[in-house]
Each structure stands twice: as structure tokens, then as C-alpha cells.
Length: 391
Image (cartoon, rainbow, N blue to C red):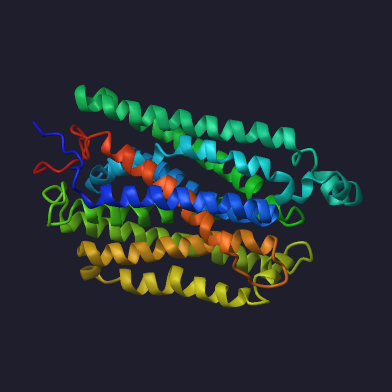
């Protein structure tokens, strides 16, 4: 019978947790000061930080459900890390409150005078109005939290009651849950991000956002696993082989390529159509300094990771793979910044100090919660049928 492996008190993740909490508290305190000085800038910066960290948690849920449906040793070894990521969603539901409080600062369609003068906003007001916006947000979080609770409760039950019954429940819940997450996140992407520029629309936008979330989640999980599997005291050093890191690296490469395909598809369709209601969205991001970030994103989010991850040797070395994965996490943060911020700064690329403080503040609290959840359960699901026999 397998023994339950826990995160030890001296592990590096505990030190990271303590630093993250201090950084989070300081970052949020500075954000509060910045909010008093410049409320509009605070809400804009906070929205970017929130969407980035929230995306990692929801991306963990998507990958977790993919594992329950498909199986495989690659998912068995990262299952508890993914589950810990999903259990940050209650925190993100709470941290969504500032977005609601700042809706009038963020979204043009909340201004009655703007709607009265704009036929397009009037036409969209049936969907874009605050009562319906609040109701949809409550529905989204209700679905996500219900799925999170079911997946985590049954996973813990499997530790004490092995057998095909629990595994079957997890698989069936994941089949329907993946569809529900796809639908709800598509609408959430429209509500929280695309409606920042309500005259513009894209039918692939929700899929594009979800693709980025899965990339950021997988890229986040890999450095965590590298720390847990470190030869100098990692509690999972005996459980994870180079072959499994190789599998994680291949999945990361596949997700990066899929994200690139979505981004390129949206760009080519919009640019080829050259419609006046669609093309301004890209024009904002191709001038005033934003063009450098656009090209930079292509390089750091696709070209360089693609070239490096083609190497079998890199994917089998945990430290090297963790480095490129951390690189992709940063690139994904820049991607969220690129998607959101030009909606407000149409005159050119600017980076405000609150942009950095919001990422540190929200991220510090998120990381503290993640490690806290990780310490609360065994690091390996004891009776996952996909877990290798030698573990």
C-alpha cells in the first residue's frame, strides 16, 4: 500500500509561501494607496492582475478534468498540484468584488449617457447591463465552485475508498464539467474582457482566453513539480521520472502551439476582413509602442519556447524545463496585459507602477493560498489507477 507523502516543514515551498504572503500584503496595501490617488488606474491594473492569477486556477481545473477523462501517468503525478490550484477559486470569487466595485470605471457600457448617444451600445444593452452582468458572474462562479468541490471531495474519497466507483464519478463529472467550463469561461471572457471595447467582437475570443489559461496553468505546475521532485530533499523525488517530465514538456509545447494557432486565426480573419468595426482593435496594438510588445509576445510566447521545447534533453531535465515554463508564465502575464490595457491606453504603451503592485499583491495572496492548500493533503492520490506501479 502506498504511503501518504506530505510537504515537509523545511521544504522551499514553505519559504516561498511566507515571502508570498508578505509581498501580497505589501502589494495590496500599496494598491490601496494608489487607489485613493488614482481610482481609474487602480481598477485597470487590478483587472489585469486578477485575470492572470484567476486564469491559472481555472486552467488547473481544465487540465485536471482532461486527466480524469484520458488518464495517464503525466496527470497522476501532478493531480494534487492541479487540485490545489482549483481550490484557489473561492479566493478569486472574493477578489472579484473590486472588479464589481470598479465596473463604472472599467466598462463604457455602464455609463447611461454613453449608451444614450450610441446606437450600438443601445442594441447591446439587453446583454450588457449591470444586473445581468452580476447574475452571470454569480452563475459562473457557482458552476466553477461546484465543480471544484465535487472534484476535490471525490478525489479525497478515493484515498480511503479505492475502487472503480469513485474514478468513474470523477470521469463523468469531468466530461460534463469540461463542457460547462468551456461555456462559462467563453461568456466570462466576453463579459470581463471583450466588453472593455464594446464595439469590437470576435467569435474565437473566449477560446483564445481559455487557451492562454491552460498554457499558464501547465507552465505554473511544472516549476512546482520540479521543486517537489528535486533530488536534494524533494518529497516526490522517488515518484516522478524523467519520462514524466518529458510528457509534461510535450504537453506544454502542444498548449503553446494551440494558443498560437488561436491568436493567429483571430488575427488573420480580422485583418483579411478589414471591417471598420473590427480592425481598430488591432490598430491600437500595432502603434504607439504596442507594436514592440506585440512582436515581443510572438517571440517570447511562441518562437523561443517552441524552439527550446523541441529538444528532448530539455524536456527530460526538470530544472531546464522549469526555467522555460517560468518564462512562459511571464509571457502569459504580458499577454493578458496586451489583451486588456490598450482598451484604456489607446494613445500608446505605458506601464504604471500600480500594474506591478497589483500583480504582486494579488499574486502573493494567491500563492500563499495555493501552498496552504497543497500542504493540506497528500501530494499523491494514493489510489489513482494511472499512477505508476513503482510509486
